[in-house]
Image (cartoon, rainbow, N blue to C red):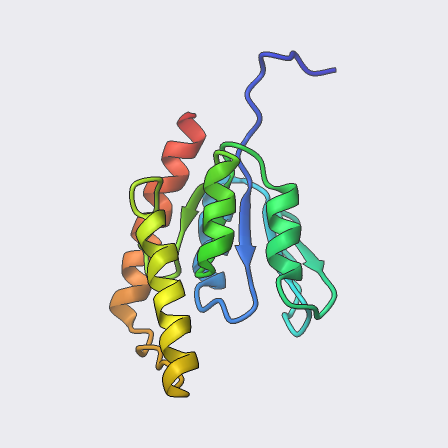
Length: 157
């Protein structure tokens, strides 16, 4: 039986489809001995690490995002580049980090959502698809540092 005042350890949720930093997430989870939940609609090789749980969702749009939003709690950490999922995570009190190391916060999520809508409108009007910048070693390093800082803060509560 647990004491109702006992602090639960944060978990690390990874929106894993097209996530370039799963290995970095696993290293942080291992270092801090926290549960990491990798959510995808398949195609991800399961880890043998007992701290890592793989969740396979149906291949429907937003199924992974919905699963994470329904299962994450305040104090958990979510790694995603999906802006609507980031917003939902912030609403429940989770900490949210993008794969490039950018933290989503209450202060910047509104601009991120607005920018997403503008980009979608421009694609609709012009028919051009946006191009993602190449993911660099510098991005990977920035992410690793930011996740470490965020996880330490989450563990402190």
